[in-house]
Length: 261
Image (cartoon, rainbow, N blue to C red; front, top):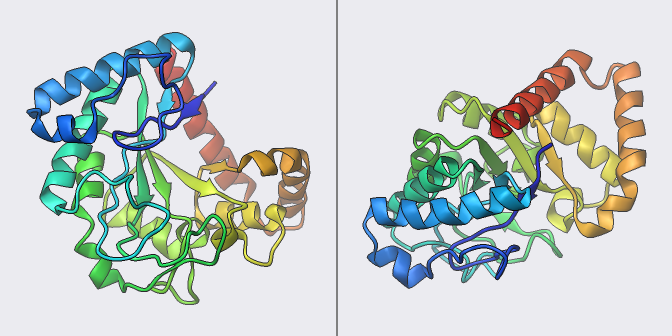
């Protein structure tokens, strides 16, 4: 089984007071990479003992303007420093027996509306987004097992779409960034992702885009059974490939088995 929790330096820590705390952001910036890796390893090791084996972190986004969703949760405004911290976090997490999730690909330098509650848009082109790629590249190079796709609407793709609904974005991650691990969505029922569709359609679009694993918010949990039924019908009527879904399921089983060793 894969059990994922947020564990962000300077951000959301779901296991607060249950495991050794991650360093504060200021402290993390002062630490050399090996010392930071060790502190993160201790947190991950304790989380593993509680039954959690995936951290939904680190945040690799670097901001360059308004972003009410991520403000106060990013590691640095400096791309090189963010890359250093992402790499150390991934290495420390995974040395503690927990899979790290680099998020939220391909970055949200500007997103004036919170994608959880509004149709937030990232206005950058692919070429502009490449400027913010190094922290994601650093996390992947450090061995991150999972990458989470961004929930906002990206003008870089045509037509504009959330990263987790875009085959172009997922293929960009796979091809240019050479990522062969698990691709995860952010919450499928967030406003910028779901827009005017039902959550069942949001799931089908994500799978067709090439993601392997999907998140829903607490409100979406009640719809999981109907999502499963809709996915089965989509396979039956040819809207989804059974082989591609099986490949994703096998990838998730393999990760769960690896983390149980």
